[in-house]
Image (tube, rainbow, N blue to C red; front, side, top):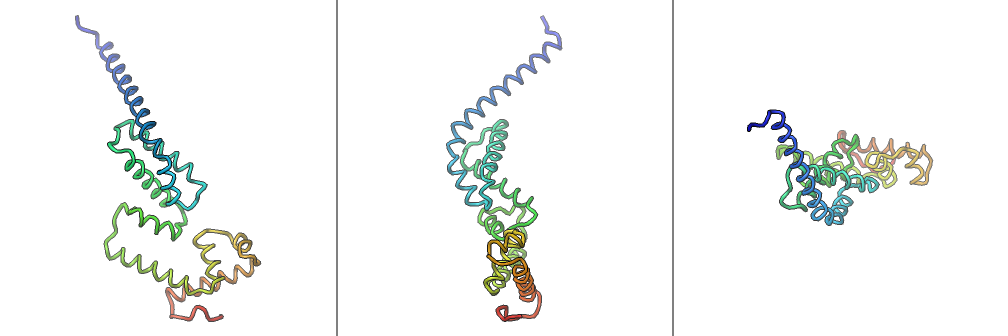
Length: 199
């Protein structure tokens, strides 16, 4: 006797639900046995490659969510490379979303091999040369101006916070920033000057 079409659809829906439940169960078992034991390695990786340590626990959780969701579709052959690649991609995406990209983050991403779309080799050489020139310019600044510029432009601190850290007034910080940025601009875009000379 032939089953009515409704029952056939119900059987298909039940089969799909049963398969999904089995897949979820397999993913849970895989996650607990293969991924959770990698937590120490994952945490070390994130801490080594992300400056803001207060974000580390959130990043770990986000990695776990992405790994688990991927496992629901297909279990990876090897857990460790999959987890670390997921973490790397997540960190890259976070850096891209940041409004201010610290110089250290650029260096960290280079060490991660993070270039999703490889720029042409000449662009890479030019960018590295610009970073070298910037580092030379920073190294040429008087110490206090360099500290103020790095705290402002790299760390993103306010003048008030910089003043507190340096133990000086905000006007002094303003003077250090003005002198430092002017000297950097002259070094990078203008006539070569002695940056240690008093203005």
